[in-house]
Image (cartoon, rainbow, N blue to C red; front, top):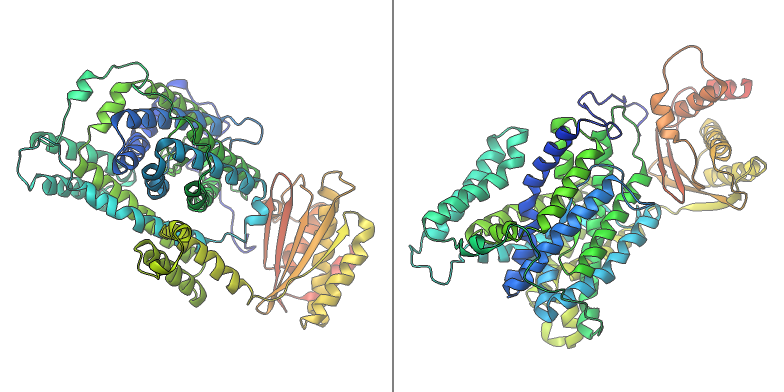
Length: 592
Protein backbone atom coordinates (compact mmCIF):
# COMPACT_ATOMS: atom_id res chain seq x y z
CA UNK A 1 0.00 0.00 0.00
CA UNK A 2 1.35 3.40 -0.99
CA UNK A 3 0.65 5.61 2.01
CA UNK A 4 -0.38 8.54 -0.18
CA UNK A 5 -3.27 6.63 -1.76
CA UNK A 6 -6.88 7.00 -0.67
CA UNK A 7 -8.96 3.95 0.19
CA UNK A 8 -12.42 4.54 -1.34
CA UNK A 9 -15.52 2.48 -0.70
CA UNK A 10 -17.02 0.25 -3.36
CA UNK A 11 -20.42 1.89 -3.90
CA UNK A 12 -21.31 -0.53 -6.70
CA UNK A 13 -22.05 -3.41 -4.31
CA UNK A 14 -25.75 -4.20 -3.80
CA UNK A 15 -25.16 -7.52 -2.04
CA UNK A 16 -21.74 -8.18 -0.50
CA UNK A 17 -20.30 -11.65 -0.19
CA UNK A 18 -21.87 -12.34 3.22
CA UNK A 19 -25.29 -10.92 2.31
CA UNK A 20 -28.28 -13.10 1.44
CA UNK A 21 -30.18 -11.81 -1.60
CA UNK A 22 -33.49 -13.43 -2.62
CA UNK A 23 -33.09 -17.01 -3.80
CA UNK A 24 -34.71 -16.28 -7.16
CA UNK A 25 -32.28 -13.42 -7.88
CA UNK A 26 -29.33 -15.60 -6.87
CA UNK A 27 -30.52 -18.46 -9.08
CA UNK A 28 -31.03 -16.16 -12.09
CA UNK A 29 -27.56 -14.64 -11.73
CA UNK A 30 -26.07 -18.11 -11.35
CA UNK A 31 -27.85 -19.15 -14.55
CA UNK A 32 -26.49 -16.06 -16.33
CA UNK A 33 -22.89 -16.91 -15.48
CA UNK A 34 -23.38 -20.56 -16.43
CA UNK A 35 -24.76 -19.47 -19.82
CA UNK A 36 -21.63 -17.40 -20.35
CA UNK A 37 -19.10 -20.05 -19.41
CA UNK A 38 -20.85 -23.27 -20.48
CA UNK A 39 -19.44 -23.29 -24.01
CA UNK A 40 -15.92 -22.79 -22.70
CA UNK A 41 -16.23 -25.58 -20.13
CA UNK A 42 -17.47 -28.06 -22.73
CA UNK A 43 -15.58 -26.98 -25.86
CA UNK A 44 -12.10 -27.15 -24.31
CA UNK A 45 -12.18 -30.94 -23.67
CA UNK A 46 -13.99 -31.54 -26.98
CA UNK A 47 -11.34 -29.60 -28.88
CA UNK A 48 -8.46 -31.40 -27.16
CA UNK A 49 -9.92 -34.87 -27.67
CA UNK A 50 -10.93 -34.14 -31.28
CA UNK A 51 -7.41 -32.95 -32.11
CA UNK A 52 -6.01 -36.12 -30.53
CA UNK A 53 -8.34 -38.34 -32.59
CA UNK A 54 -10.42 -39.63 -29.65
CA UNK A 55 -13.78 -41.29 -30.28
CA UNK A 56 -17.21 -39.94 -29.33
CA UNK A 57 -17.38 -42.12 -26.22
CA UNK A 58 -14.26 -40.48 -24.78
CA UNK A 59 -15.61 -37.01 -25.61
CA UNK A 60 -18.92 -37.73 -23.91
CA UNK A 61 -17.13 -38.88 -20.76
CA UNK A 62 -14.78 -35.87 -20.74
CA UNK A 63 -17.70 -33.44 -21.06
CA UNK A 64 -19.59 -35.22 -18.28
CA UNK A 65 -16.55 -35.06 -16.00
CA UNK A 66 -15.82 -31.41 -16.86
CA UNK A 67 -19.32 -30.25 -15.93
CA UNK A 68 -19.47 -32.38 -12.79
CA UNK A 69 -16.11 -31.17 -11.48
CA UNK A 70 -16.68 -27.54 -12.49
CA UNK A 71 -19.99 -27.41 -10.64
CA UNK A 72 -18.69 -29.21 -7.55
CA UNK A 73 -15.60 -27.03 -7.15
CA UNK A 74 -17.59 -23.84 -7.83
CA UNK A 75 -19.74 -24.76 -4.82
CA UNK A 76 -16.56 -25.53 -2.86
CA UNK A 77 -15.18 -22.09 -3.67
CA UNK A 78 -18.33 -20.45 -2.34
CA UNK A 79 -18.65 -22.74 0.72
CA UNK A 80 -15.13 -23.74 1.76
CA UNK A 81 -14.33 -26.95 3.59
CA UNK A 82 -11.42 -26.27 5.92
CA UNK A 83 -8.57 -24.60 3.99
CA UNK A 84 -10.06 -25.54 0.59
CA UNK A 85 -12.13 -22.78 -0.99
CA UNK A 86 -12.07 -18.99 -1.06
CA UNK A 87 -15.52 -18.24 0.37
CA UNK A 88 -16.25 -16.05 -2.69
CA UNK A 89 -18.10 -16.48 -5.99
CA UNK A 90 -15.38 -17.94 -8.21
CA UNK A 91 -16.81 -20.08 -10.99
CA UNK A 92 -14.59 -22.93 -12.12
CA UNK A 93 -14.22 -24.43 -15.58
CA UNK A 94 -11.84 -26.31 -17.86
CA UNK A 95 -8.60 -24.52 -18.63
CA UNK A 96 -7.62 -23.64 -22.20
CA UNK A 97 -4.00 -23.43 -21.04
CA UNK A 98 -3.90 -27.24 -20.85
CA UNK A 99 -5.00 -27.87 -24.45
CA UNK A 100 -1.50 -28.30 -25.94
CA UNK A 101 -0.04 -30.58 -23.25
CA UNK A 102 -3.31 -32.55 -23.03
CA UNK A 103 -3.32 -33.26 -26.77
CA UNK A 104 0.25 -34.56 -26.54
CA UNK A 105 -0.67 -36.81 -23.61
CA UNK A 106 -3.83 -38.08 -25.33
CA UNK A 107 -1.91 -38.97 -28.46
CA UNK A 108 0.75 -40.76 -26.41
CA UNK A 109 -1.48 -42.74 -24.03
CA UNK A 110 -5.11 -41.69 -24.22
CA UNK A 111 -7.25 -40.54 -21.31
CA UNK A 112 -5.56 -42.87 -18.75
CA UNK A 113 -2.14 -41.24 -19.28
CA UNK A 114 -3.69 -37.76 -19.29
CA UNK A 115 -5.53 -38.53 -16.05
CA UNK A 116 -2.37 -39.74 -14.31
CA UNK A 117 -0.42 -36.63 -15.36
CA UNK A 118 -3.20 -34.34 -14.11
CA UNK A 119 -3.41 -36.13 -10.75
CA UNK A 120 0.37 -35.98 -10.26
CA UNK A 121 0.66 -32.31 -11.21
CA UNK A 122 -2.36 -31.27 -9.09
CA UNK A 123 -0.38 -31.77 -5.88
CA UNK A 124 1.89 -28.92 -7.01
CA UNK A 125 -1.01 -26.53 -6.45
CA UNK A 126 -1.52 -27.70 -2.88
CA UNK A 127 2.21 -27.16 -2.27
CA UNK A 128 2.05 -23.78 -4.00
CA UNK A 129 -0.91 -22.72 -1.84
CA UNK A 130 0.75 -23.86 1.39
CA UNK A 131 3.97 -22.00 0.60
CA UNK A 132 2.35 -19.09 -1.19
CA UNK A 133 4.33 -16.54 0.81
CA UNK A 134 7.62 -18.24 -0.05
CA UNK A 135 6.84 -18.54 -3.77
CA UNK A 136 5.48 -15.02 -4.13
CA UNK A 137 8.85 -13.65 -5.30
CA UNK A 138 10.28 -16.78 -6.95
CA UNK A 139 7.56 -17.27 -9.57
CA UNK A 140 7.26 -13.77 -10.97
CA UNK A 141 4.93 -12.27 -13.62
CA UNK A 142 7.67 -12.29 -16.27
CA UNK A 143 8.06 -16.06 -16.05
CA UNK A 144 4.29 -16.60 -15.91
CA UNK A 145 3.57 -14.26 -18.81
CA UNK A 146 6.23 -15.89 -20.98
CA UNK A 147 4.76 -19.35 -20.45
CA UNK A 148 1.23 -18.09 -21.16
CA UNK A 149 2.31 -16.62 -24.51
CA UNK A 150 4.05 -19.91 -25.37
CA UNK A 151 0.82 -21.78 -24.62
CA UNK A 152 -1.01 -19.47 -27.04
CA UNK A 153 1.59 -20.06 -29.76
CA UNK A 154 1.36 -23.84 -29.30
CA UNK A 155 -2.45 -23.96 -29.45
CA UNK A 156 -3.08 -21.46 -32.28
CA UNK A 157 -2.28 -23.97 -35.10
CA UNK A 158 -5.02 -26.22 -33.67
CA UNK A 159 -7.53 -23.36 -33.99
CA UNK A 160 -6.48 -22.68 -37.59
CA UNK A 161 -6.87 -26.38 -38.44
CA UNK A 162 -10.41 -26.41 -37.03
CA UNK A 163 -11.45 -23.55 -39.33
CA UNK A 164 -11.40 -25.91 -42.34
CA UNK A 165 -13.16 -28.91 -40.75
CA UNK A 166 -16.35 -30.12 -42.46
CA UNK A 167 -18.61 -33.18 -41.93
CA UNK A 168 -17.64 -36.37 -43.75
CA UNK A 169 -20.67 -36.22 -46.06
CA UNK A 170 -20.42 -32.46 -46.72
CA UNK A 171 -21.39 -31.60 -50.31
CA UNK A 172 -21.73 -27.83 -50.09
CA UNK A 173 -19.55 -24.97 -51.26
CA UNK A 174 -15.84 -25.08 -50.42
CA UNK A 175 -16.13 -21.47 -49.26
CA UNK A 176 -18.74 -22.33 -46.61
CA UNK A 177 -16.21 -22.90 -43.77
CA UNK A 178 -14.48 -19.59 -44.53
CA UNK A 179 -17.74 -17.65 -44.55
CA UNK A 180 -18.88 -19.35 -41.34
CA UNK A 181 -15.64 -18.52 -39.53
CA UNK A 182 -15.67 -14.95 -40.84
CA UNK A 183 -19.22 -14.31 -39.65
CA UNK A 184 -18.54 -15.79 -36.20
CA UNK A 185 -15.35 -13.76 -35.74
CA UNK A 186 -16.97 -10.56 -37.03
CA UNK A 187 -19.79 -10.85 -34.49
CA UNK A 188 -17.34 -11.43 -31.63
CA UNK A 189 -15.06 -8.54 -32.63
CA UNK A 190 -17.89 -6.06 -33.23
CA UNK A 191 -19.39 -6.79 -29.82
CA UNK A 192 -15.94 -6.60 -28.21
CA UNK A 193 -15.11 -3.24 -29.79
CA UNK A 194 -18.50 -1.51 -29.73
CA UNK A 195 -20.56 -3.30 -27.08
CA UNK A 196 -20.95 -2.09 -23.51
CA UNK A 197 -19.63 -4.08 -20.57
CA UNK A 198 -22.46 -6.62 -20.54
CA UNK A 199 -22.49 -7.14 -24.30
CA UNK A 200 -18.73 -7.72 -24.36
CA UNK A 201 -19.20 -10.62 -21.96
CA UNK A 202 -21.84 -12.15 -24.22
CA UNK A 203 -19.85 -11.55 -27.42
CA UNK A 204 -18.22 -15.02 -27.73
CA UNK A 205 -21.50 -16.80 -26.87
CA UNK A 206 -23.51 -14.81 -29.44
CA UNK A 207 -20.76 -15.36 -32.03
CA UNK A 208 -21.02 -19.13 -31.51
CA UNK A 209 -24.83 -19.06 -31.78
CA UNK A 210 -24.94 -16.88 -34.93
CA UNK A 211 -22.11 -18.84 -36.54
CA UNK A 212 -23.80 -22.16 -35.80
CA UNK A 213 -27.12 -20.98 -37.26
CA UNK A 214 -25.37 -19.86 -40.47
CA UNK A 215 -23.40 -23.13 -40.58
CA UNK A 216 -26.66 -25.09 -40.39
CA UNK A 217 -28.02 -23.37 -43.51
CA UNK A 218 -24.83 -24.14 -45.50
CA UNK A 219 -24.79 -27.80 -44.44
CA UNK A 220 -21.96 -27.80 -41.88
CA UNK A 221 -23.94 -29.17 -38.92
CA UNK A 222 -25.12 -32.66 -38.08
CA UNK A 223 -27.98 -32.49 -35.57
CA UNK A 224 -28.87 -36.17 -35.65
CA UNK A 225 -26.87 -36.99 -32.44
CA UNK A 226 -28.65 -34.10 -30.70
CA UNK A 227 -32.10 -35.45 -31.51
CA UNK A 228 -31.09 -38.96 -30.44
CA UNK A 229 -29.53 -37.93 -27.12
CA UNK A 230 -31.55 -38.28 -23.91
CA UNK A 231 -32.45 -35.25 -21.85
CA UNK A 232 -31.44 -36.94 -18.61
CA UNK A 233 -28.99 -39.77 -18.12
CA UNK A 234 -25.36 -40.82 -17.92
CA UNK A 235 -22.92 -40.60 -20.84
CA UNK A 236 -22.57 -43.61 -23.11
CA UNK A 237 -19.06 -44.24 -21.84
CA UNK A 238 -17.08 -45.78 -19.00
CA UNK A 239 -14.45 -44.41 -16.63
CA UNK A 240 -11.11 -44.44 -18.51
CA UNK A 241 -9.03 -45.22 -15.41
CA UNK A 242 -5.46 -44.21 -14.60
CA UNK A 243 -2.20 -45.23 -16.26
CA UNK A 244 0.00 -46.26 -13.32
CA UNK A 245 2.87 -47.70 -15.38
CA UNK A 246 4.88 -44.48 -14.90
CA UNK A 247 6.66 -44.93 -18.20
CA UNK A 248 9.35 -42.72 -19.70
CA UNK A 249 6.59 -40.86 -21.53
CA UNK A 250 4.92 -40.00 -18.22
CA UNK A 251 8.11 -38.56 -16.74
CA UNK A 252 9.05 -36.56 -19.83
CA UNK A 253 5.55 -35.05 -20.07
CA UNK A 254 5.15 -34.33 -16.35
CA UNK A 255 7.35 -31.15 -16.33
CA UNK A 256 5.08 -29.56 -18.95
CA UNK A 257 1.99 -30.30 -16.87
CA UNK A 258 3.68 -28.97 -13.73
CA UNK A 259 4.61 -25.70 -15.47
CA UNK A 260 1.07 -25.16 -16.77
CA UNK A 261 -0.33 -26.07 -13.35
CA UNK A 262 1.84 -23.39 -11.73
CA UNK A 263 0.68 -20.86 -14.30
CA UNK A 264 -2.92 -21.85 -13.54
CA UNK A 265 -2.21 -21.33 -9.86
CA UNK A 266 -0.81 -17.87 -10.66
CA UNK A 267 -4.01 -16.98 -12.50
CA UNK A 268 -6.09 -18.21 -9.57
CA UNK A 269 -3.82 -16.16 -7.29
CA UNK A 270 -4.75 -13.05 -9.29
CA UNK A 271 -8.44 -13.95 -9.40
CA UNK A 272 -8.40 -14.56 -5.63
CA UNK A 273 -7.20 -10.99 -5.09
CA UNK A 274 -9.49 -9.41 -7.70
CA UNK A 275 -12.64 -11.14 -6.43
CA UNK A 276 -12.10 -9.57 -3.00
CA UNK A 277 -11.77 -6.10 -4.52
CA UNK A 278 -15.14 -6.30 -6.31
CA UNK A 279 -17.02 -8.20 -3.58
CA UNK A 280 -16.47 -5.94 -0.56
CA UNK A 281 -18.14 -2.66 0.30
CA UNK A 282 -15.13 -1.36 2.21
CA UNK A 283 -11.75 -1.18 0.55
CA UNK A 284 -9.13 -3.19 2.44
CA UNK A 285 -5.92 -5.07 1.69
CA UNK A 286 -6.32 -8.54 0.16
CA UNK A 287 -6.72 -11.43 2.58
CA UNK A 288 -4.15 -13.94 1.38
CA UNK A 289 -5.81 -16.70 3.37
CA UNK A 290 -8.66 -16.31 0.88
CA UNK A 291 -6.16 -16.56 -1.97
CA UNK A 292 -4.67 -19.72 -0.45
CA UNK A 293 -8.16 -21.20 -0.22
CA UNK A 294 -8.85 -20.35 -3.87
CA UNK A 295 -5.62 -22.01 -5.02
CA UNK A 296 -6.34 -25.06 -2.85
CA UNK A 297 -9.79 -25.38 -4.46
CA UNK A 298 -8.14 -25.06 -7.88
CA UNK A 299 -5.84 -27.91 -6.91
CA UNK A 300 -8.82 -29.98 -5.75
CA UNK A 301 -10.51 -29.30 -9.09
CA UNK A 302 -7.44 -30.59 -10.94
CA UNK A 303 -7.20 -33.63 -8.69
CA UNK A 304 -10.87 -34.50 -9.25
CA UNK A 305 -10.51 -33.86 -13.00
CA UNK A 306 -7.68 -36.36 -13.18
CA UNK A 307 -9.47 -38.96 -11.09
CA UNK A 308 -12.64 -38.65 -13.20
CA UNK A 309 -10.81 -38.41 -16.53
CA UNK A 310 -11.23 -34.94 -18.02
CA UNK A 311 -9.16 -31.79 -18.57
CA UNK A 312 -8.03 -29.71 -15.56
CA UNK A 313 -9.97 -26.87 -13.95
CA UNK A 314 -9.19 -23.24 -13.30
CA UNK A 315 -11.02 -20.17 -12.02
CA UNK A 316 -12.94 -18.16 -14.61
CA UNK A 317 -12.40 -14.40 -14.48
CA UNK A 318 -15.94 -14.01 -15.82
CA UNK A 319 -17.06 -14.22 -12.18
CA UNK A 320 -15.27 -10.96 -11.44
CA UNK A 321 -16.73 -9.15 -14.45
CA UNK A 322 -20.28 -10.28 -13.62
CA UNK A 323 -20.01 -9.07 -10.02
CA UNK A 324 -18.57 -5.76 -11.16
CA UNK A 325 -21.50 -5.30 -13.55
CA UNK A 326 -24.36 -6.50 -11.34
CA UNK A 327 -23.12 -5.50 -7.89
CA UNK A 328 -24.19 -8.90 -6.50
CA UNK A 329 -21.29 -10.72 -4.84
CA UNK A 330 -23.26 -13.00 -2.51
CA UNK A 331 -21.93 -16.54 -2.36
CA UNK A 332 -25.44 -17.84 -2.98
CA UNK A 333 -24.88 -17.04 -6.66
CA UNK A 334 -21.92 -19.39 -6.78
CA UNK A 335 -23.82 -22.15 -5.00
CA UNK A 336 -26.79 -21.98 -7.39
CA UNK A 337 -24.49 -21.78 -10.42
CA UNK A 338 -22.49 -24.77 -9.23
CA UNK A 339 -25.66 -26.82 -8.68
CA UNK A 340 -26.81 -25.98 -12.22
CA UNK A 341 -23.48 -27.14 -13.72
CA UNK A 342 -23.73 -30.43 -11.82
CA UNK A 343 -27.28 -30.97 -13.10
CA UNK A 344 -26.20 -30.22 -16.68
CA UNK A 345 -23.57 -32.96 -16.40
CA UNK A 346 -26.41 -35.49 -16.31
CA UNK A 347 -27.98 -34.20 -19.52
CA UNK A 348 -26.52 -35.95 -22.60
CA UNK A 349 -28.66 -33.61 -24.71
CA UNK A 350 -26.57 -30.60 -23.61
CA UNK A 351 -23.34 -32.43 -24.35
CA UNK A 352 -24.54 -33.49 -27.81
CA UNK A 353 -25.73 -29.97 -28.64
CA UNK A 354 -22.38 -28.42 -27.83
CA UNK A 355 -20.50 -31.19 -29.65
CA UNK A 356 -22.61 -30.38 -32.74
CA UNK A 357 -21.01 -26.93 -33.00
CA UNK A 358 -19.26 -27.03 -36.40
CA UNK A 359 -15.47 -26.92 -36.68
CA UNK A 360 -15.20 -23.41 -38.21
CA UNK A 361 -17.30 -21.96 -35.34
CA UNK A 362 -15.43 -23.85 -32.63
CA UNK A 363 -12.14 -22.86 -34.28
CA UNK A 364 -13.16 -19.21 -34.17
CA UNK A 365 -14.05 -19.56 -30.48
CA UNK A 366 -10.63 -21.11 -29.76
CA UNK A 367 -8.92 -18.42 -31.85
CA UNK A 368 -10.54 -15.69 -29.76
CA UNK A 369 -9.75 -17.57 -26.54
CA UNK A 370 -6.08 -17.90 -27.50
CA UNK A 371 -5.87 -14.22 -28.49
CA UNK A 372 -7.13 -13.33 -25.01
CA UNK A 373 -4.64 -15.78 -23.50
CA UNK A 374 -1.75 -14.24 -25.45
CA UNK A 375 -2.70 -10.68 -24.44
CA UNK A 376 -3.05 -11.84 -20.83
CA UNK A 377 0.52 -13.13 -21.01
CA UNK A 378 1.77 -9.81 -22.38
CA UNK A 379 -0.06 -7.92 -19.61
CA UNK A 380 1.55 -10.17 -17.01
CA UNK A 381 5.00 -9.40 -18.35
CA UNK A 382 4.40 -5.65 -18.55
CA UNK A 383 2.95 -5.62 -15.01
CA UNK A 384 6.40 -6.59 -13.74
CA UNK A 385 7.99 -3.60 -15.49
CA UNK A 386 9.20 -4.14 -19.04
CA UNK A 387 12.86 -3.51 -18.36
CA UNK A 388 15.74 -4.66 -20.56
CA UNK A 389 16.23 -7.72 -18.36
CA UNK A 390 12.56 -8.71 -18.53
CA UNK A 391 12.50 -8.13 -22.28
CA UNK A 392 15.51 -10.43 -22.71
CA UNK A 393 13.95 -13.13 -20.53
CA UNK A 394 10.76 -12.96 -22.59
CA UNK A 395 12.45 -12.81 -26.01
CA UNK A 396 15.01 -15.57 -25.44
CA UNK A 397 12.52 -17.91 -23.75
CA UNK A 398 9.83 -17.35 -26.39
CA UNK A 399 12.08 -18.17 -29.33
CA UNK A 400 13.83 -21.02 -27.58
CA UNK A 401 10.43 -22.59 -26.95
CA UNK A 402 9.38 -22.01 -30.55
CA UNK A 403 12.65 -23.38 -31.91
CA UNK A 404 12.58 -26.59 -29.88
CA UNK A 405 8.88 -27.21 -30.52
CA UNK A 406 9.50 -26.88 -34.25
CA UNK A 407 12.51 -29.22 -33.92
CA UNK A 408 14.71 -26.49 -35.37
CA UNK A 409 17.41 -26.46 -32.64
CA UNK A 410 19.93 -29.36 -32.70
CA UNK A 411 17.13 -31.91 -32.65
CA UNK A 412 19.27 -34.69 -34.17
CA UNK A 413 22.07 -34.24 -31.63
CA UNK A 414 20.06 -34.99 -28.50
CA UNK A 415 19.00 -38.36 -27.02
CA UNK A 416 15.37 -39.39 -27.69
CA UNK A 417 14.37 -38.93 -24.03
CA UNK A 418 15.69 -35.36 -24.01
CA UNK A 419 13.93 -34.65 -27.31
CA UNK A 420 10.66 -35.93 -25.88
CA UNK A 421 11.02 -33.47 -22.99
CA UNK A 422 12.22 -30.42 -24.93
CA UNK A 423 10.01 -30.81 -28.01
CA UNK A 424 7.26 -29.26 -25.91
CA UNK A 425 7.98 -25.58 -26.51
CA UNK A 426 6.12 -24.50 -23.41
CA UNK A 427 8.31 -26.72 -21.22
CA UNK A 428 11.53 -25.57 -22.89
CA UNK A 429 10.55 -21.90 -22.83
CA UNK A 430 9.33 -22.14 -19.24
CA UNK A 431 12.55 -23.73 -18.01
CA UNK A 432 14.56 -21.12 -19.92
CA UNK A 433 12.53 -18.29 -18.34
CA UNK A 434 13.06 -19.67 -14.82
CA UNK A 435 16.83 -20.04 -15.35
CA UNK A 436 17.20 -16.55 -16.83
CA UNK A 437 15.05 -15.03 -14.08
CA UNK A 438 17.29 -16.66 -11.49
CA UNK A 439 20.40 -15.27 -13.20
CA UNK A 440 18.90 -11.76 -13.22
CA UNK A 441 18.10 -12.08 -9.51
CA UNK A 442 21.80 -12.54 -8.82
CA UNK A 443 22.30 -8.89 -9.86
CA UNK A 444 20.09 -7.63 -7.07
CA UNK A 445 21.60 -6.22 -3.93
CA UNK A 446 22.55 -8.60 -1.19
CA UNK A 447 19.94 -9.29 1.48
CA UNK A 448 21.05 -9.23 5.11
CA UNK A 449 18.94 -11.22 7.54
CA UNK A 450 18.75 -12.41 11.11
CA UNK A 451 16.34 -14.24 13.40
CA UNK A 452 15.25 -13.16 16.86
CA UNK A 453 12.73 -14.55 19.34
CA UNK A 454 9.23 -13.10 19.09
CA UNK A 455 9.38 -11.29 22.42
CA UNK A 456 9.97 -7.73 23.59
CA UNK A 457 13.31 -8.68 25.17
CA UNK A 458 14.74 -9.38 21.70
CA UNK A 459 14.20 -5.81 20.50
CA UNK A 460 17.77 -4.75 21.26
CA UNK A 461 19.12 -7.56 19.08
CA UNK A 462 16.92 -6.44 16.20
CA UNK A 463 18.01 -2.81 16.63
CA UNK A 464 21.68 -3.80 16.69
CA UNK A 465 21.17 -5.74 13.46
CA UNK A 466 19.57 -2.92 11.45
CA UNK A 467 21.96 -0.37 12.90
CA UNK A 468 24.99 -2.37 11.76
CA UNK A 469 23.60 -3.24 8.36
CA UNK A 470 22.21 0.25 7.82
CA UNK A 471 25.67 1.68 8.33
CA UNK A 472 27.10 -0.95 5.96
CA UNK A 473 24.91 0.35 3.10
CA UNK A 474 25.82 3.97 3.82
CA UNK A 475 22.95 5.29 5.96
CA UNK A 476 23.99 7.80 8.61
CA UNK A 477 22.57 10.35 11.04
CA UNK A 478 18.84 11.06 10.92
CA UNK A 479 18.24 8.47 8.22
CA UNK A 480 19.75 5.73 10.36
CA UNK A 481 17.79 6.91 13.40
CA UNK A 482 14.55 6.77 11.40
CA UNK A 483 15.39 3.25 10.23
CA UNK A 484 15.85 2.18 13.87
CA UNK A 485 12.53 3.76 14.88
CA UNK A 486 10.70 2.03 12.02
CA UNK A 487 12.22 -1.26 13.10
CA UNK A 488 11.19 -0.69 16.71
CA UNK A 489 7.57 0.20 15.95
CA UNK A 490 7.07 -2.61 13.42
CA UNK A 491 8.75 -5.20 15.66
CA UNK A 492 6.71 -4.28 18.74
CA UNK A 493 3.50 -4.29 16.70
CA UNK A 494 4.15 -7.86 15.55
CA UNK A 495 5.14 -9.10 19.00
CA UNK A 496 2.00 -7.62 20.58
CA UNK A 497 -0.45 -8.66 17.86
CA UNK A 498 0.91 -12.09 16.98
CA UNK A 499 -0.66 -15.27 18.23
CA UNK A 500 0.83 -16.80 21.36
CA UNK A 501 3.62 -18.91 19.90
CA UNK A 502 6.67 -18.90 22.15
CA UNK A 503 8.67 -21.12 19.80
CA UNK A 504 8.29 -18.85 16.78
CA UNK A 505 11.04 -16.48 15.73
CA UNK A 506 10.81 -13.34 13.63
CA UNK A 507 13.08 -13.25 10.60
CA UNK A 508 14.24 -9.74 9.74
CA UNK A 509 15.66 -8.91 6.32
CA UNK A 510 17.21 -5.70 5.03
CA UNK A 511 18.08 -4.98 1.41
CA UNK A 512 18.85 -1.95 -0.75
CA UNK A 513 16.38 -0.88 -3.45
CA UNK A 514 18.28 1.88 -5.20
CA UNK A 515 18.75 4.62 -2.62
CA UNK A 516 15.92 3.21 -0.51
CA UNK A 517 15.93 0.37 2.01
CA UNK A 518 13.39 -2.43 2.23
CA UNK A 519 12.83 -3.83 5.71
CA UNK A 520 10.95 -7.15 5.73
CA UNK A 521 9.65 -9.25 8.62
CA UNK A 522 8.54 -12.87 8.44
CA UNK A 523 6.59 -13.74 11.58
CA UNK A 524 3.83 -15.88 13.05
CA UNK A 525 0.29 -15.15 11.79
CA UNK A 526 -1.18 -12.11 13.50
CA UNK A 527 -4.71 -11.02 14.28
CA UNK A 528 -4.71 -7.62 12.56
CA UNK A 529 -3.37 -6.37 9.23
CA UNK A 530 -1.10 -3.36 9.68
CA UNK A 531 -1.64 -2.18 6.13
CA UNK A 532 -5.39 -2.24 6.66
CA UNK A 533 -5.17 -0.39 9.98
CA UNK A 534 -3.13 2.40 8.41
CA UNK A 535 -5.59 2.65 5.51
CA UNK A 536 -8.58 3.10 7.82
CA UNK A 537 -7.07 5.65 10.24
CA UNK A 538 -9.10 8.83 10.35
CA UNK A 539 -7.55 12.32 10.56
CA UNK A 540 -9.06 13.21 13.95
CA UNK A 541 -7.36 15.09 16.79
CA UNK A 542 -8.25 12.52 19.48
CA UNK A 543 -6.73 9.08 19.10
CA UNK A 544 -5.35 6.30 21.28
CA UNK A 545 -1.73 5.53 22.12
CA UNK A 546 -1.84 2.67 19.59
CA UNK A 547 -3.03 5.11 16.91
CA UNK A 548 -0.16 7.43 17.81
CA UNK A 549 2.34 4.67 17.19
CA UNK A 550 0.74 3.76 13.89
CA UNK A 551 0.69 7.40 12.76
CA UNK A 552 4.34 7.75 13.69
CA UNK A 553 5.22 4.65 11.69
CA UNK A 554 3.25 5.78 8.63
CA UNK A 555 4.91 9.20 8.70
CA UNK A 556 8.39 7.67 8.52
CA UNK A 557 7.97 5.22 5.63
CA UNK A 558 7.04 5.40 1.99
CA UNK A 559 5.20 2.13 1.46
CA UNK A 560 3.89 -0.76 3.57
CA UNK A 561 2.72 -4.18 2.42
CA UNK A 562 1.36 -6.67 4.96
CA UNK A 563 0.54 -10.08 3.46
CA UNK A 564 -1.03 -12.54 5.90
CA UNK A 565 -1.13 -16.25 5.12
CA UNK A 566 -2.35 -19.25 7.09
CA UNK A 567 1.11 -20.12 8.35
CA UNK A 568 3.13 -16.88 8.19
CA UNK A 569 2.92 -13.10 7.93
CA UNK A 570 5.09 -11.04 5.58
CA UNK A 571 5.45 -7.36 6.48
CA UNK A 572 7.46 -5.32 3.97
CA UNK A 573 8.34 -1.65 4.60
CA UNK A 574 10.04 0.66 2.11
CA UNK A 575 11.99 3.58 3.59
CA UNK A 576 13.39 6.53 1.64
CA UNK A 577 16.30 8.66 2.89
CA UNK A 578 15.62 12.20 4.09
CA UNK A 579 11.79 12.14 4.00
CA UNK A 580 9.97 14.51 6.36
CA UNK A 581 11.27 16.14 9.52
CA UNK A 582 13.15 13.29 11.17
CA UNK A 583 14.14 15.32 14.23
CA UNK A 584 10.47 16.05 15.02
CA UNK A 585 9.58 12.39 14.53
CA UNK A 586 12.33 11.26 16.88
CA UNK A 587 11.37 13.86 19.46
CA UNK A 588 7.69 12.87 19.26
CA UNK A 589 8.57 9.21 19.66
CA UNK A 590 10.73 9.84 22.72
CA UNK A 591 8.11 12.12 24.29
CA UNK A 592 5.38 9.49 23.78
